[in-house]
Image (cartoon, rainbow, N blue to C red; front, side, top):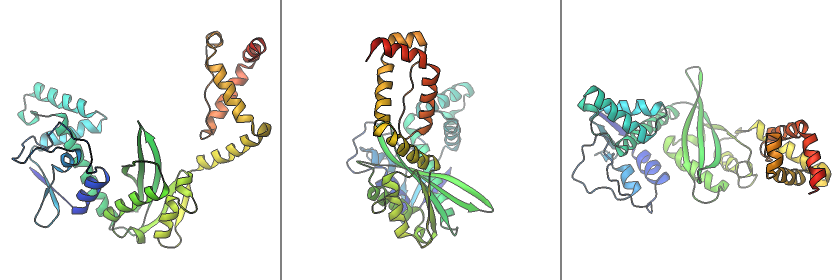
Length: 318
């Protein structure tokens, strides 16, 4: 058996508020115990209650989580670290139990796997919090994105410890609504207030992709962070994104601002010409402004297939 103690704000703010809200959808799966040894409390009815069910508040206000089956807990983490999904981890643990006959691996479910992973991630956050509170300076890297219809703000933290520079992924913060600079700053500030209460005196810089909601002079995330931090705060833009902006400006000046629109129209036309695609055995690649290397790929494609493309255009006269 092993006990894990966590700071009160780490559980209540980051787990309870940042990741889960009071209006989360109800869930039917009430199995949230790490070891599968439930208690007499009513089963959790929401995602937030389910997430917090593995933690018990102590007399000092902090939270305790107890792992009684350490063998299963460590095996779950081992399989998950290899890239297995929760469902696959559950099946692997079950297979291990069947092959070895060891009862300590018996009774694993996907919910227990999720609870174990939540406990492990919370432990990592607790460790990072202790590190950041005991170093003199650190920087962060921010990147807003959308994946599988879910918007999030990715936060990484970088610091020097014992002569080595470390780069840790802190959190991927879910974002509801648009990616405004103020909204992302408020979420970042809420997390930093918990992870490192003295962050305003320790944060020396931030790196971003250079998007407008990141670097905007009046309402960008970096602007808000710069105003909150100490003087001599430094900002780093992604070099590739800066080059994207230069290339975008160049393309917009070609052919009286019509170069990019004509190019995308031509690409769209060629991609649906099934006979031409079948004869050439290739499809014209797409191009977007934010990936300047794709422009080189497209131009190289047109150079290789210019004779076939010209012949097709002369014949069809689109």
